[in-house]
Amino acid sequence: MKKVGYILFGLLCLNQNIFGQESKNKNYQDNQWHLKDLKKDNVAGTSTELAYKELLKKKKSKTVIVAVIDGGVDTHHEDLQDKIWTNKGEVANNNVDDDNNGYIDDIHGWSFIGGKDGDVLYENYEIVRIYKKLSEQYSDSVSAETRDSEEYQYWLGIRDSVHNQVRTVVSNFEYYSRIKSTYDYYVEFLKKETNSDELSVKKINSLPRTDSTIIRAQEFMELIYQYYGSLETDFDQVLDVLDDELKMYNVNADYRSLVGDNPNDPTEQYYGNNNVMGPDAEHGTHVAGIIAGTRNNKIGINGVADNVIIMPIRAVPEGDERDKDVANAIRYAVDNGAQIINMSFGKAFSPNKEVVDAAIKYAMTKSVIMVHAAGNDGQDIGITPSYPVKYYTEGDSARLWIEVGASTSTADEMLPADFSNYSKIRVDVFAPGEDIMSTLPDNTYDELGGTSMAAPIVSGIAALLLSYYPELSPEQVVEIIKKSSVKYPDLEVITPGTMDELTSFSQLSNTAGVVNTYKALKIAEEYSSK
Image 1 (tube, helix red, strand yellow):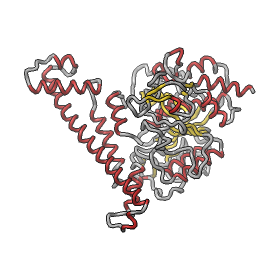
Image 2 (cartoon, one colour):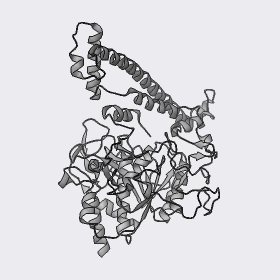
Image 3 (tube, helix red, strand yellow):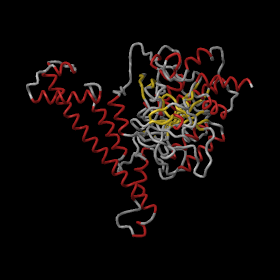
Image 4 (tube, rainbow, N blue to C red):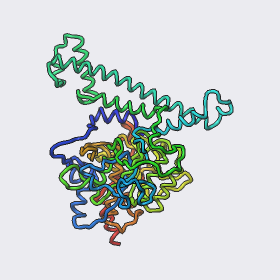
């Protein structure tokens, strides 16, 4: 689930350019700190480039298929177009299910959040869907006996949580609307006073403090600069994010009708369409590029794995994904030959967890590795889970599951990203997840951050191991990734989600490690030679 505060932090404090970077050169490989080496480059990367240079030059590899369950992938991107899975059993656009897999014209994958009437962009948060369902059962006129029931008390908690969240988003929207109005007024005023279209702190402060409006404008812009590190702040982006939040909390919205399925049937299969790009492919394209961006083609970025094919599967809208879509996406990936499934998504509630559990168990029977992002709430997911999880309701867990937290480029107290979820038991490894350069739609590139970026780094390393050492079992690949992580057991770090609370890095995952491609390949060589 997205958090408003974290998104605002990303947009304002980091001044992130969400529209992507374009240049004549379009070579951003030097910006990929996550592929660099701690000793050589003084950043806590994964030593991936060093591994290619020293370990893989003369080795042969086999193609590995990685399914990316996400919001969509730009299959035409210049750095990905040769890396997209093609269903060889299907004839394009003949409106026939040639391979009899239940999905018509699934040439490059499938979307479980689209239908003949269009493609879903927004969805309610899961807590809103629970709220809507329980609202049909309960009202203020229920009996005293019902009021004392456990489910009714649960409903009250859900209701109050939704109402509080909506009030918070509305309050934030009104607050930033007022700031934007004041900001726009003073910007225009100061441009006239300085006779310049480009404002700077020096120009603003050079104005004589003889007029009360000038003084208020100077003081306001000084605050803007202190908070956001720039005088050029796009509050429209902030308001857009908050407006999106309101859409996800809109209890009266019916976003799902476009799909044409029965959303109340969690076991339903064989719905959707073949539009694997969807209306917003930013997140999924970025994830796919981290794994598979074409290496050394003198444009864009380098993916972690060089001989890999991406299978795009849409199941993740703006809002919370539905359990039935996640389960069907996993099954589709497994049935169509994916060896690794990347899942850079998560949510706080899973009302139909049993169908997801069944799909995960199915993936385990086919020896498919599953990589999941731990989430960006800065909390312990051992206490507050981020679904899906590898633990089944009846006990036991998925043996080929890797849960990934996000790390930064500095091997000091700031090593865990401040937004990253963590858990001594439930998180397996950390991987770079802050300011990661990768592909965006329309042949653009930019840096994004989150455990969503850390997970595909791990998926890429897993693909690299299977590609160059195909004799390894999936169990060995998972073991190697954990075993080869660079350990920081005694490092005192700031606990994610806090300002200054210190803890041992060993308390944030069960390996106390950050993944490392070079070390993983060295251990793979040892396993292979036995």
